[in-house]
Image 1 (cartoon, helix red, strand yellow):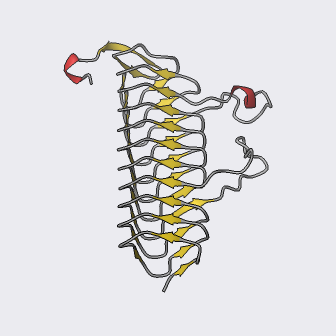
Image 2 (image 1 turned 180 degrees about the vertical axis):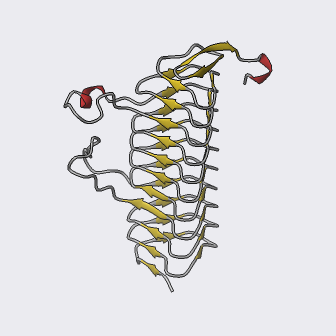
Amino acid sequence: MHIVDPSVVCGERVEIGHFTVIEANVKIGNDVKIGHRVTIHEGTVIGDGVTIADGAVLGKPPKPAKTSTVKLSGELPPLVIGDHCTIGANAVIYRGATIGAYTLIADLASVRENVQIGQYVIVGRGVCIENHVQIGDRTKIQSNSYITAYTTLEDHVFIAPCVTTTNDNYMGRTEERFAKIKGATVKRGARVGGGAILLPGVTVAEETFVAAGALVTKDTEPRTVVKGFPARFSKMVDERELL
């Protein structure tokens, strides 16, 4: 059995698994497949051809702690999931996010509120995307990476597994941090290798290649390879590898 509020607008050929709960004013497109034990919170909008795996939670209202750095301001709009997206098992996507068409949010990934994700994006298993993040089209974020609040990833960016982004130079010890909190900006076509760390506010320029394990402490130049701890210029990117 499942529980569907009478106000839900449901398209044609929608499949709903066992023990799924769909709250009020949810809109579901045509040809949608919803697995078992899924929770879809109030007002969520789901496009055509979407597949939602078992245990996913969609449109979850955020409840930040009193000590959270990022505060809520005003009522959030509903979660919107574009056409032909795939949502993995036990993924959690919060209210106030927008997911573009043909995007994959893999198993155990989480996407917080005030996040904009473009089309044809891959968000890998166990990835955590915090609030106020912008992600462009055809970007790939591999398993277990952490995308902190106020980060921007432009189009065609590649983030390898276990990359960490940061946004706070004060580590929560002064009020000054609230005025200066800022994540990294990764420009179009840049690639960041496995286990790399991007410090607050750095810009990874277009088509930069950040080597695995690098610590990026300052802005990079376009089309350069940087590596090391801290990361330094190594060579220019091979022209055959440019977009």
